[in-house]
Length: 263
Image 1 (cartoon, one colour):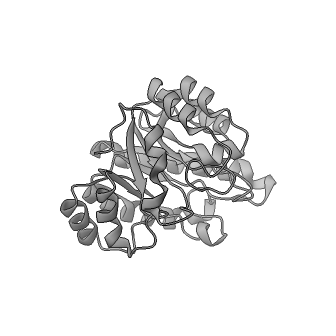
Image 2 (cartoon, one colour):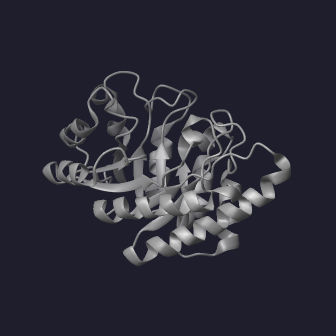
């Protein structure tokens, strides 16, 4: 089990470029960034280099998704915008030497259009995977709970598996978020144990409020041991909203299996 930390949700008490040093000081050697595009590539490279960190994942630009819109990846009329987002993402992904790029499916508010949005999303997913594969970068996509994001196009583990099994692309995998899938009623350990080969990245936070482990309803000692004993061999990233200064929320490291790699 290889641990990483999300610098978009965590260490937000610090300016973005200072979060790298804080993560390293706390013992992490890997980070992920949701949307790095407001920060010059050279600045991120320098922060990674100076702190002996690797960046393991970024998201492909998602358009207006985070502002309540439909996003880019599944909207039939946004093909040109998605292509431009791929170009920008590829530049960052290559320069930062990430392992994975995550594509957010987006929303579909009209049930009658859902089949067309899914078709567009799957085509864009394949295009992205074909573009990233030559650089040894896996393309992941994420299911998000419909409480936080109503009308999200992909919201369950089963839907992710359906897409993976349909596309049969060796470089397309699921990004499994323990928080989102737990809120959707997924049996987390069962899913990971049975589908490790289809998962490209794992993220975690407690439910129901997306805080650090121990602030909610999930038993992370069970979840961490489940991940460690499964066939999944990728990164496991803390992506929670700290209830206090991030460095004061890391007690969960005490229940991580001793084989886990943090530094």
